[in-house]
Image (cartoon, rainbow, N blue to C red; front, side, top):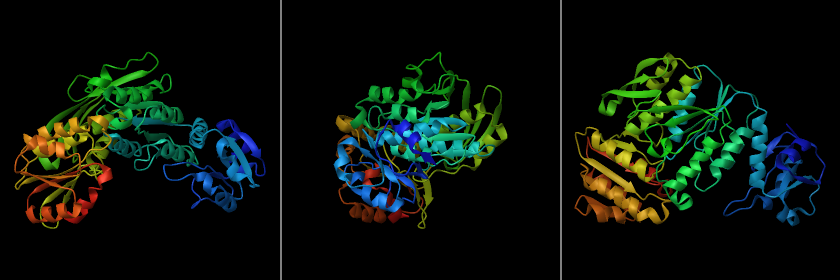
Length: 452
């Protein structure tokens, strides 16, 4: 429930019409808006919510926000109208206003890789002892995070938010919405370079989470990440570090690598040490496990609950997810997305895992690399050239740079997805291991569905 005074105060708006003074909720979608809800018209590349204000108000009978430059679109509207400079900023302001009213601890996670898996593991652990709200899937931008907070109807013990960015300034806005008590940057790697330009741009953007964590709050630092460990210090926060390679307060030790069966690991934390087994594959996932476990331990979760969650947690959908096909080969679905670091991790993990058959890589473009596109695709090409992959099927445009680096008869290049799938079906045999990975824009998951 929102009063008009609360809304005007939160968005620093100016009332144009006042009819309804109390609103049951906030909506941004005319397809789902209900009676009594205030409509916020958002804008995108191919749409403008202001074009649907009359439809929204006829359904809700309540009112809307409207940008000052769009007032001409609502000249005859009789419902409540509040004028703002920017409706996206207004949505964020409403979420920040609501966040201040909520009791409980807010945890924010960002980083180039591992955000979603870290969040999902952490939520699973916290739920053993507490009530937890979290942003679903990867709804980690300003709209997704704002709507997630606005959807909260009652207090939880913990609120866990994954924060994403592809342009300068987004993390600062998201952190000001969430106002985290606890925060972590999982790692710094080349991603979203079209918007963030270079590694230093990525680092600067991600560090805004730490700088906007509440004073006295807890900041977790990956001590194995050279960019993070050398770039942040604060007297205003409690800093806790975690690592696999270096010494740290929260440390994970690999006791045994069981190949496709995962790892046996030992946690050495400030007050406790314990062993666990995990079925997650790849060293990168061990950092996700360590990070989430360290945070959970710091807020009072005991070793038995952490151990239970780690041992029960299954590989996350489309994130190095192994699928045993009906024809007896193993598909590794890593199609959620791809940047240079995640591509390198996936390839090296498959290189190190045992295979009774061929190793086949179906590799697509990595997007949003800007003027670094050629460089990073060539880097992946160098890794593949020295790898034990028996066959490499490339799909897209930028993969030509991978081809240039490998330059041998293991490689086939495809511009047509169906042709690639048909060729793959001819060469894949029982006991082969097939990695499928590429940028989300290429919809590489369609290849997995056809090969499964």
